[in-house]
Image 1 (cartoon, protein in one colour):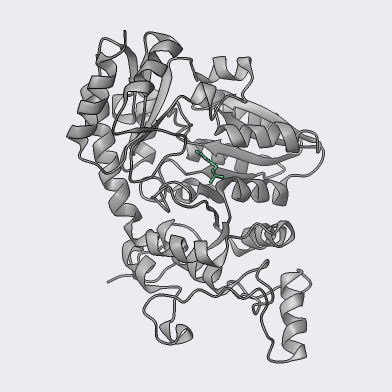
Image 2 (image 1 turned 90 degrees about the horizontal axis):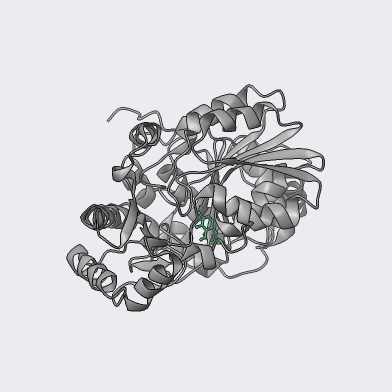
Length: 416
Ligand SMILES: Cc1ncc(COP(=O)(O)O)c(C=O)c1O
């Protein structure tokens, strides 16, 4: 087979995830990695200890891809290294990854690796509510100006990037949570590349990655994940990942992670590592389920809108979806004609789907973003971004779609 030009030799992602990053001879021949819970690691010599510290503290620049010997588990540990190596091929264009104990930890650490006082971060809105909170509560008081621009509005995004002074980060979440509005990554990245400050381009790829959207191929520098969602897939652990196109970028992120102490713990790394080979299978099924249900609910008398990529009407949104995404994904949103009251009535009546925040698990979840995940947004931000009172977000699981559709239909029928 020819080299696929993806930096990972001739193996396709679904094979590479099962074959790289783990050497059984380092785990007594075990076919699955052992869990290494040690907090500290013995050096072969004092010189090796000195060299490992020189690399870890940035005094000595290692060769591309070279890692320091293990020192102390807040910096890194074997299970993090195995997991990071196995995640890389799932994200085409990636060079390295760093794992964190939540998605917010990954985002926070990436922000603090590149944000400086008196600089600007341009970001699309809406964002996951925790990320908006992080910008307002920590970055702004620290002297970083936040410039919010509506997702998908290419002209305003270009203009905001061009006019940003000391621009350190361009941050995109696409599709946006929970409105699914898509932003053209290639266009925003192209504008950022021409900015004299050359901001770091970050994309939160939690909704469609790693199977259906590959931001590094469109010019992003860093892809961020809440691994709590599709990557782990069973709503039973928290995790986060930052994936970079260069080793230089990951070194900066890992050095902040060493200070903050928010690396993913060995047991969680081992769990997540076992979930990676099935992420594409789960996401395919979830996308098919979501598409069948969303399309079947179009035109229901209780709904003013079903929001799903295959149902986009706006030609620009259609264009971005077709260009940028392989499949529409497992999330859709329903907008109720009866506003919050009808949305709550629906949530009270769903039986198979659970009323819970989060997404990407094998079980179907429904939530009311405006009163939960996005309740921290200001009234102006809510109005501009389309997170309305009547909006319910659905994360489709892997159940039989016909049972889910019947469940949603009976909950819709129960609205007074
Ligand atoms: C798009 C998106 N990004 C980031 C996060 C934060 O991830 P975590 O809850 O793992 O910290 C979430 C959580 O819901 C999310 O939906």
